[in-house]
Structure formats: C-alpha cells, structure tokens
Image (cartoon, rainbow, N blue to C red; front, side):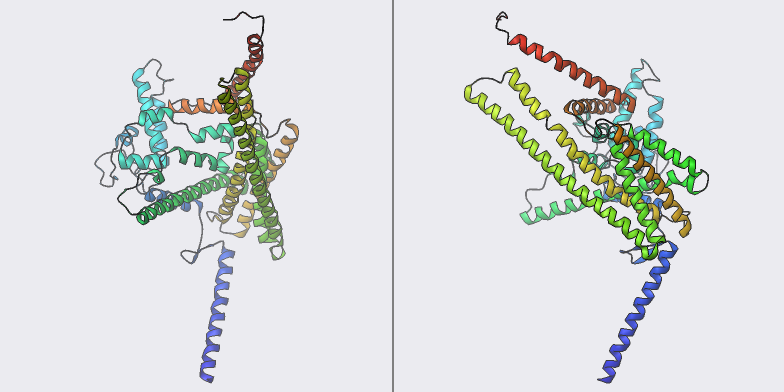
Length: 511
C-alpha cells in the first residue's frame, strides 16, 4: 500500500512538473511572438505570406481553386512534364498560362494580352475586338474557382455563350449597391456577394446523383459534398482575411518603419477616410471599419502593456458588446424585411384575387399601387442587407487584425509589434472620427429610398453586362449613371399622373 501511495504521489509530481514546464514554454513562446497550432500541437512564428501560400495550395488541391498545385509554372504552354491534365486547355492557351497557373498569374496574363487588343486601341478592327471578347470569356471562366474546376473537369459548356450573356457578376453588383470598392483592400469581397455568386453558379450540391444508389448512399454523398463546399468556403474566408491583413500591414508599415511622420500618417488616414465617406454607405463603412480596427488594436495593446491585461479585457468587453448589438440589429432588420415582404405579397395577392373574382384586368392605377407597395419594401430589404454586411465586416476585421498583430515578418520584438498595433489604432481612430463627422453632415446618412435603390440596381445590371463584354467602368461612371437613372425615373413619375388623368377624363374621345 505504501509503495502504491508513493507511486501515485510520484505520478502527481511528474504531472505538475510537466504542466509547469508546459506553462513555461508557452510563456516564453508568447514573449517571443509565437502562436500555438492546435492541430500540430506546436508553437511557431506566424507569417501572413506563408498562410496565403498555404491557403492557395489547399484551394487548388481541393478543387475550389481550380485544381492543381500551388507551385504554378510561370512559363507558357509547351511540352511541360509538370502540366496538370485538364479536359480542355483552350482558355489556358489563349491566355498563355500553365494549367497550374494561380489566380495572380491568370490575372496578370489577361491584363497583358487584353491591353494589346483592347477595342479603344484598335478602332474598327473587328479581329482585335473578337480576340478581346474571347480573352474576357477565358478570364471569366479561369478566374473563378468553381467555373475553372468545372472547365478543367468537363471542358467548355455547350451553353457557355448564353450563360455568359445572362451572367450577372454579384461582386460588381454589390460593389455598386453598397459602394464597397474603395474599402475592398481592408474588408475584401463582401460575404453577401460571395454567397450570391455561389448560388448563381452550378455547385457540387446541384450535381445529379446516381438514382441507383440507396437512400443511405445518397445521404452520405450529399453530406460529403456539403463538407467539401463548407471547407471551400472556410478556405476562401481565410484567404480573404490574410489578403486584407497583408494590405493593412502594407498601409501602416511606412509609419512603423519611421519613413512617414506621425503628422503625415494621420493626415493620410483622414484623407483616405474622407474619400471613402463620400461614396454610398461611405460614412457607415468608415464607422464600422474604424470601430472594429480601433478596438482590436486597443485589445492587443491592453493585454501587452496594462496591469494583468486589464486594458485588453476592457477592449474585449467593448468588442463583445458591439458584436451583441450587431447581432440584435441583424435579427431586427431580418424580421422587418420578412414582415415588409409578407405584407407587400399579401396586398399584391389580394389585388390579384379581386381582379380574378370580378373578371376584370388590373387597371394602370391598381398596377401602380401594387408596384408602389413592392417598392416600399426595398429600403427595408436593403437595411437587412447592410446589417449582414456590417456583421461580416466586423468579424472579418477582427480576424484581420489578429493576423496582422501575430505576423512575425520583420517584427520579432514586442516593441515593434506594439508599434504596429499603435499604427493600426491610429488608422482605426481616424476612420471612426471621420465617419461620425460625415454622418452628422449627411442629410440622409445610410438611407436610400426606392428610387435610389432601383437606380443602383439598374446601373449594377448594366455594369455587369458591360463587364461581360470586356468594358470597364469607373466609380465616377457608376455614380453619374445612377444620377441619370434616378432623374429619368423621377421624370417618368411626373408624367405618369398626367397620363392617368387624361385617361380618366370623361370628356376625352373614346377610342
């Protein structure tokens, strides 16, 4: 018994010693700037560039990135033993890239060749115009992970030309709806646009299932497809966060390195925030981004510098409270959107039912009333869409800042990382300040009526069609087109009541 008790005591001592050693290693690793990989069970120096390469490789390997490997060849096509086998390589040959080419190489090759045969540089040259359109088609297929994977597997679709004509680019569409192009370097492509893009494209979930399979086998197949799709979404989000972290790091590095003074850095942040705040939802973007970035920086600095990390805990509490508030607003906006949509549909169905019962067709006045009821719901749905965007931006920037603060490239000392965090804090503070000031001066801050929304929808549709034809429009073009579309809509509205009164005039001659 005494020997058994002694053995138990020795085991406890060993366990405590192991825990103490584990705590010591963890403390030293954190002090050195390392982070812990739970899967590999090891501490390591994190680098944004390494994660980008790793995610690119995983995306390609999983098929979500078009297949292949991350070590894409820079050479043009030829007898290359490392070329990845695909069903059809016409688009790769057209762009002059390897079948292993990554996203950046494809984009670079497209722009290089498209500049040469652009219609503006070759007026009246139908051959150059046709080549430009073919390049655009090839780039549109190969630049998208899902369409590239389908092309690699099945080759060109028989309905590809009609698909291209009907294609609407969700990323362009939502950029115009919410004016997000200026903030894309810091928040990436909006989650709502990515989900719309996935729904519009043929995904693995939509592929037919062999009917000879049993119900259990079908369920297992669907489950595996869902897992692959979810993994692809997670990888794309990681890539988005890492790219944004890289962009934010590059933005603050000149100040951190002492190449830009405090005064000039603050002025540049203010100028950038003002430029963003001018656009659609600009003040909401700068407020949302500024708050998320500022609090993330305060949390990091607080944990590193304050007594027992109290400053970090305070910042984290603020962040959690803001997240809870965003969730409540999202739920509220969602309920409002559902309620407004249901009400409008009930009114429309009642009008239709009355027309069917009386045997009369809806007159112009009733049709206008129905359209107006549906129009009234548009701001509510847009409010819900913005609530989704806000939640997405906040959560994305939280991860972006964490990656930036953990990045060890050129910042292995605690002092340098704190300086980076301070630069990020200044950046966030100035964005938040400019956003709040702009919000006070804008008469209809963050609000759009039905005419605004319909004008943006119209311009977004035109822009996506123009892009499919190889034409690029600037932000200034978008805003001008939106103003013109809204003006035309208002002019048409002013004329409509006159038309109705003439039609209802008892003295008017009958036809």
